[in-house]
Length: 271
Image 1 (cartoon, rainbow, N blue to C red):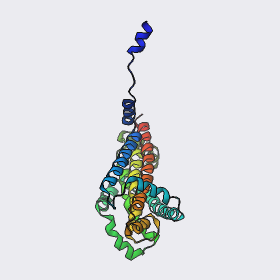
Image 2 (spheres, helix red, strand yellow; image 1 turned 30 degrees about the vertical axis):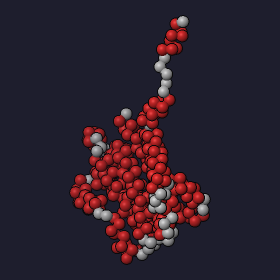
Image 3 (cartoon, one colour; image 1 turned 60 degrees about the horizontal axis):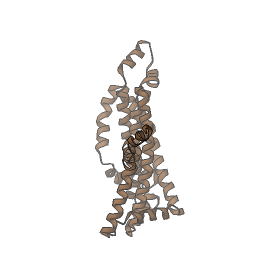
Image 4 (tube, rainbow, N blue to C red; image 1 turned 90 degrees about the vertical axis):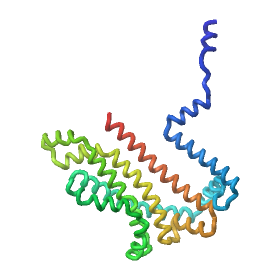
């Protein structure tokens, strides 16, 4: 009798409430739930509006899976990835060391800070005509555009990370006769890693956008930007949205990986 009362007194688990609780507690689950909701709203809106420029999401998804199996799309994806890498890798190799130097040497920061701020506020797309005149329409021009889109985000993230290093640790290291190189390698850079990765995360998103914009503005006949332009000129909107969403998905995955590394390093730093 007692065991029966105990069993009946146990609260029943609501599966819907449990699912909502899990979604709310997981960042990735929340993001996926939002994306699913947007896809459903897009599907409903596209069918209700019956507007050629906004096709239903199901048509976009169908176009995406049809495209990724074609050799032309795969070649274009490789070319856009190459443009991204040729611009983003130099942005890393220049942005991180420049941010470290500016963060450690205040005079250098005073000299360069106005130019960095001006470059961040400048619309990079406005430089494309000048780059075309100087460099032509080659992949070098597109890589330079990617570089300009991303390098300053990486530099600023690194600069902020180095400047936020615990001063007491640096002073303690100096009191024991540590050299500047030791302070950088053992204290400043490890402490700044979460913010450095934050700058890299923002830089990835900017670099991906820069790669597509570069191909669009330079009139490239190849690459995913060229394919968007080609499909857009013939109003093949499912294909246009399919490429845009595919690029966005890849960029989101890359930034999510960096975010998780950034969060792990942040926990380690404060442990």
